[in-house]
Image (cartoon, rainbow, N blue to C red; front, top):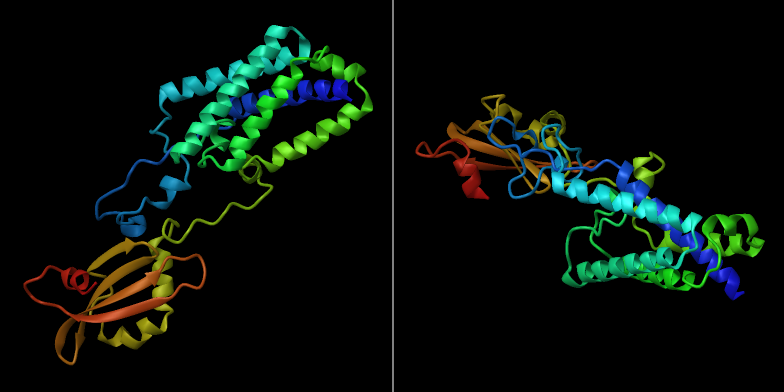
Length: 295
């Protein structure tokens, strides 16, 4: 049984190394889009909160990934791919030792990221490993290190195990891969990229919400219909977005007095609500200042 376990670890370690290499070399890197500013693009301006495409979007064409990070990622991908292939074709002790040291170093790095509470991912599988390191990530690398240590005593290379290994090796291999997948947060991200799983919806604070969508929700609301006759201009004086709301300020005349009506329109994907407040517009204040003061 020990022989079966040792031979299985050779296949498992080779598979993980090749999978990590493939992810680093083929999955494109997503970079934040160029920051947008100014009052000319109020549609997705979120004060104090990154815009939706800065978190969920695709890199702008003029914002390539940093060259150093890209070079390091490619170098690691090539190294891991070469080491995985060496595990498949050679049973030399130096190859097994190199794999053990590699996973031990990865375990230390992942553990440090977890201890420090870093927001950046470990990059174990390239762009798929973007999220903060979880406990299962540390457990996964630790188990991989243990598997590499067990594989030190395997007498055969990966290809020899595939050709000559007993059928029980296949069962153990599948079971260990299932455990590896259960401990891998990258799997859902991969399924989303392949279109096999719907993408997680962005929270309303960061969801891209076109201004046309806001106008549609506003004009169809009871709040707008109840105050439509008091509004003296179809164009708002000011438009801005904060958190889950977009605010629009319209000039109005109520009982012969110059007023401002502030509408707050939800930016949620569903069940958008509209609220409003009527504030007095002071001549000495610029448009929208009264609305800001009322908040």
